[in-house]
Length: 136
Image (cartoon, rainbow, N blue to C red):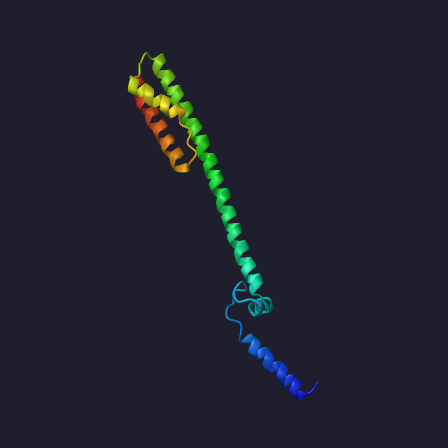
């Protein structure tokens, strides 16, 4: 190959490399795509996105576990409320209509969101303690 041809090819490559306007392989078409493949930009981009997916999946698993734990806690709080009401009735304590309404509402509650579930647990515990206090 002649030196002229080699200089022409080298100059062409340098000029084309100058057409690369971004490191993002999704920007700019063919030349950015070639540059992205050459410089490992695609691999870094894929690795970055995979890390984000992995992180989101781990957070999802953590939140699913937290929701399951809260649902079990809510179920126990409802059971405690039922037992406290039964103990109060056995002890001859009658709940007021307002209290019975609150107990019925607490037992019907089946919240789907974590915030609502936490509030329902707190309400059931508060009612349980209130009824236990009445029964002495």
